[in-house]
Length: 180
Image (tube, rainbow, N blue to C red; front, top):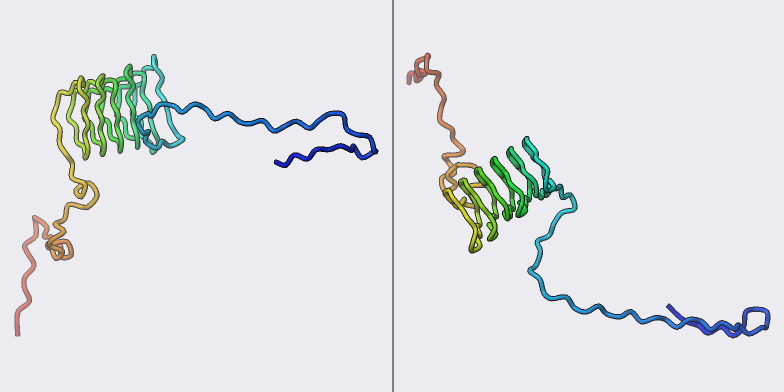
């Protein structure tokens, strides 16, 4: 931090070695601006290229698929690499596809890159399809309220508060009390 020139080594003899000057750090050349990356969690799992996996995968982290998977996927964030493929359903908050999926997709955000091939139905809140992507199936936009709230008419609160009386099929309906 501070440089102090020392001329005396404590014994009355001048110090012959000069103190080094602080080196200036060169500023690195600015990099070209890239697309802003989405924040990623530190718990990323990867199915590497050349790996063939059979079974279901579920969890709360991120998954990068560069190999081949036969089974269902249910994680927070899924990225299918250009050589990756999934044969099964995929459910995620964020799904980026550069490879192949053969099965149904349910996600909040779905992005089909130019190299993507999807054969199956997509249910999503947001969908982005780049030019060159191939998609065969139906696309349904999920409503944000329906995914979060129960299927009760929120404009009729009395419908949720007062359930219908239940009567067994084999028993007659209860008799009303006689008025006196």
